Length: 334
Image (cartoon, rainbow, N blue to C red; front, side, top):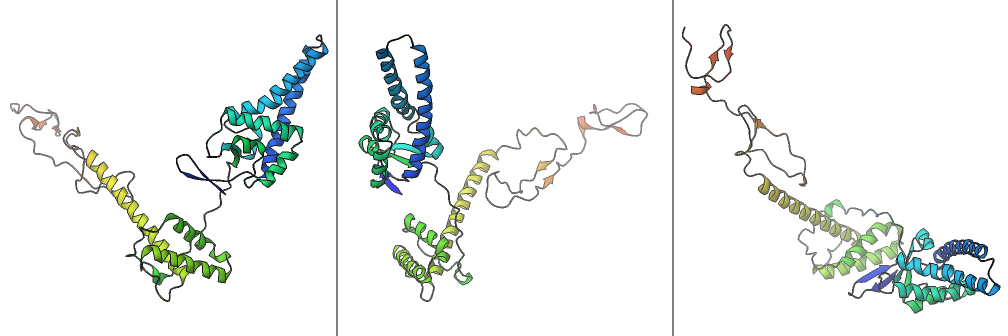
């Protein structure tokens, strides 16, 4: 792992590419470039057969410079450090500060690469890459570039064993605000791999981590508690606080959404007689709120009012059923 510092003082952790992957990428690029050069040479020879020998030599040199020298420079400039071979191997050329390369970087790398790769069959480039701490060849040194790995294999997240039951909730009053993230990461890595360590080495490492954690929290580790169990209990307490904090943030956002959308439902709802209304006492939850889903919403039908005045029921003529049409308020003569 190589730590680079950008111009904004941001530390970048990059993995420099080593000689085998770089050699494979260069080999793929050379195969493509040489194949293209042979095709261009055949085309040039066939089209300039009527010219003299000097003109044919000049065109051959121009094709060599254009394909084998200018081609890689143009590809790395346009693709920001990703040639065909590097793309196949998951590599990329970047600046020393981690930024994308430009034309001048690709020009220096291509010009020096013609000497250390093409003219020496890669011997100089291999020696320089083996000597360099970050696997850089001479073209990278003079151009101020670095070939890094873009596709890093992701390892499965290890399982953090839970603490003993008698330690659960014992450190609820512990102040964890001053513990740095690097220490949390080291504790988590130790807990996920402590079964793979030698017992003595693991015990010493747990004691050191427990002492560092106690120094940042301001409270000493309890007597008689194994350091690994103490670390696991504190990590569990931190995770529980994160869960409570996330739940509180979700509840606050749900309350804000309910306050913004839950007002004014009854005035312009457009409900008519007999339309069921949502009970005002039913709990309201936003779609993204935390917690279990709400229970069934109770509904209360709108109470019917007695038919008076213009809404009086008028019986149908010749029928026993009342007429549901709005009446005029007057009964027909008997």
